[in-house]
Image (cartoon, rainbow over all chains, first blue to last red; front, side, top):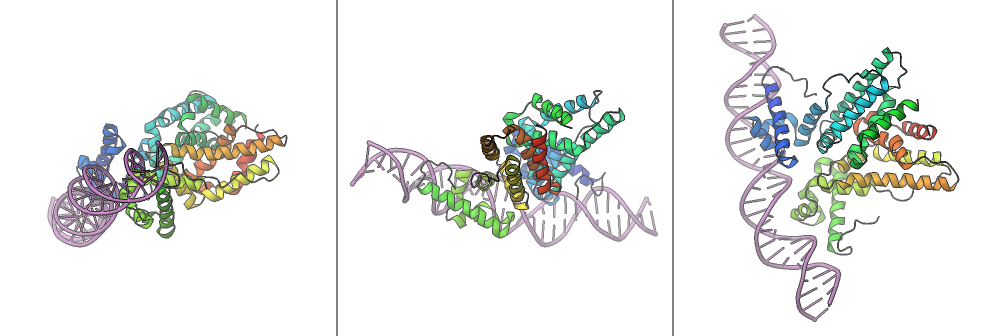
Length: 186
Length: 186
DNA sequence: CAGGCTAACGCAGGATATTCGCGTTAGCCG
DNA sequence: CGGCTAACGCGAATATCCTGCGTTAGCCTG
């Protein structure tokens, strides 16, 4: 199932996973996507290639796993005092993190994980969870909040679509426009 | 049905491309994604693997090329007499063609083409062109039409996002709901 | 704190896939 | 009809991927 919950959290498995993930990130940072190959990863992580193939199956699945880790939110979304401000701040960070060529690569890796179909779904769950937290906070302030599904359709989906299919038509201003439209058409 | 613009349209290059594309489709239909490998493709197409590698670079790029061909619209969008009806029909066909596991694969291939970044963009252009045609037709009838960009955000992006990231939350009814929301919030 | 138990690993060898140089060919063009 | 060039075929070298089998790390029971 999930690579996150390993059978023996403190043991060798966890060390190997950390070393391999780290090797992937380092190799990608140093030599770009072309330098990321299983034998090179294994060598840098201090394991044999067969270990990598056994754990992850193939390179695409490993990349999806690494991408999922990079896409996981660091913490709860920033609190700027109001629903609109919170959503705008969140969307701005989203664009800045994933709108870059590197960020686009992570998204592509998350989608491309062949064997582990659930990676993309969990990636989407991250965004939904952040939006839900913002909504709960706003509701606690007495604000009227749109549903998470509506926000996913109105904000997240257009942002992700443009990142993956139309990288040129993306900007912070565009993201903020999506947020405002989502809040006014309710 | 128009073939990709090659240097020598009627010559050997075009024949090789057709044979290779066809081999990819056949192998995928017969043995699934696992059966699609460059040597097998080359053998079936009657060429050598080196030809495939020289033309497309790697398997991901070739798959993106094939996916682009399958994603190309067959013709102008169906005319059902009204803007809302046309959009609903188009969205329904979109969901039925790309919401299947096979359709999802095409979309992923189009996104995954590494060297040829433009494939995803052209795929997006196909959708924009279809929506533009529907809009022009509606305008000719005197209807008020939303802009193509608005429709891309309100209809195409949510559909594609769900296909790639949340395959479970997809249905024709959902697509029609997107169309209606896009037409009422204007 | 010993000893068993099992998932995960290392190693080695083979199968498959990718890259490259070099000679050849198809088909456009004067 | 004959030259020119992009594209192809062939074959070898390299790299990557897969699998079986023995070994080890670390949890668990007593």
